[in-house]
Amino acid sequence: MLYLAFPADLRERYAESTWLVYDKQVLETTFGPGDILLLSAWVVPRRAEQLQIIHRARQEGARVIFVGSKEDETDEWKRQLCSLGVYDFAFFGDEVVLGVLDDLIEHPRTPLDVRAYVDETVWHLAREDPVVVETIEKPKAAPETSEPETVSVRPRWRRPRWGKPSPPPTERFQVVQPRLVVVLGLWPRAGVTTITYLLAKLFAKQLPARSVACVEHPNPWPRMWDYFQLDVRMPAETYRHWTVDGVGQEIEVDGVDLVPLPPGWVNAIDHGQSMVQYIFRQMRKPVTLVDVGTQTPSDMLLGVADRIVCVLDCDPTFLSIAELGNQYRTLTAKYGESMVTVLNKWTRYAHYEDLFEDAVKVPYLDPHVMQHALWAGQFPDVSALTSELHELTERVVTPLLPARVGG
Image (cartoon, rainbow, N blue to C red):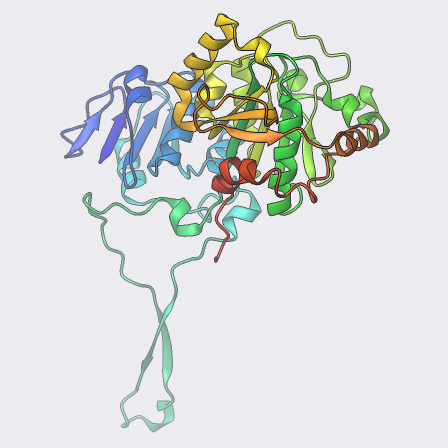
């Protein structure tokens, strides 16, 4: 099915297509494998919503074609589109050339076609169509040219049919789809940061170095800079965070790229939309984790997360607070399919099974291990915690690991 998020009705031009008239209709539409979404900036003008729609549509297996204004055409935006697996894009001035749309719909681009905007680790996986070699025998009447001659012939191109659209680029080239994990808590001292660091190490154990990014959300009180003793790695005055310049920089620690808040950070404004834009711009790694503490982040961030990890520690004194219960029910109603509840500091004396169905239990980990990591400025060593963290690994880490190329 072809979906047209376009300001003009083009259903007569493209038979068996659906016209999406306004942004809310696009946001509420569910796509499936084999679908094509032609998304225009005139129907969905806000960049954050464009990113949210693209991410969801790609996750659902649809191919996305982006059409925008010449005013918005930048190399950075094209690179961001390519990082999301969108290789078909066009930008127009005062007039939209429908022939260009025809070509984009019928001839899907590959990473090689737009390799100027694609990270090298992605486009090198693409392959051109193979060359077919035919051997042609010359007539025997011409002995001086009787040697066989090889002629290179390209396979004949065939016009694709609407009923059998080309598979999305992620299927053809095994492009890694980045995953976003948001870790939050509902009450103080639940251990949100601890669970975030444990997940970072569990992911890092399964992936190549620097495949995991750990981002500190700007709403809670900053801790990452001091925890990892980053002042010995980089002078604080030279560090540039994304809240300052929109781009930011990372600091590698133990194979994980950290995105800490600047030292002495004091939050003055809401960074919800700018943070989502930053994450989509930088998400070229297989996994990105965001530690949001006990501050409920914007729906914009939660809406694009592949997994929401809600951390609650086993403190019964919080269970009687109606406000916290209402928050939990609201999160479950909105994001139940992508949310995993973690009961941290689990003890056999706790009786939470009837309150939190299908929750993951993480026991109270050895204080010596956790304190050693804290004083050493490192991630906790999870090598000896396989059995204790097995449930957390199976429910959060394993389902989000990218498929191995060629595996």
